[in-house]
Image (cartoon, rainbow, N blue to C red; front, side, top):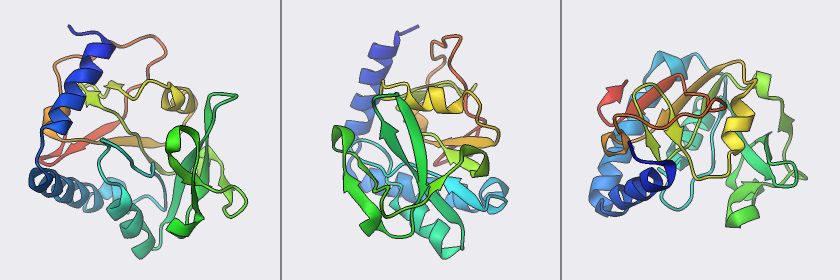
Length: 185
């Protein structure tokens, strides 16, 4: 079994080697599979990152949530405490460049949302196993956030981001559902 660093590198290679056409087709199928599911339809408040870099584009999910009247919340890193706070996002103009050059909500223009109010949390990651364990980008922010998160979690990925097994530490918390271009796992 590969360690987390090698798994991160493997995932980055697989994602980088996708053509822009392949990537767009996969993203479209992933968004369709998630937003046509009961999991999505039953959620009135959705938590999702504002994607960047190699992450799958979350803008279509955010826009679909708004279109359907859902409350869409996005995270802001609090590096001093290594935690995430989620804020309601009503417009992309409420975002600002911040920590690690991420696009995050401006707390002066958005309303903080408590984690128990988020019905469905879309958890980012680089590589996953079928049990729902994942290797993220290395900060541990989501692992800490998930420790007492009471509701449903899902990750969006393409089948090339699945491996047989991800090394799981005692503090790692698997996501409840995985959705790929081929459907739910």
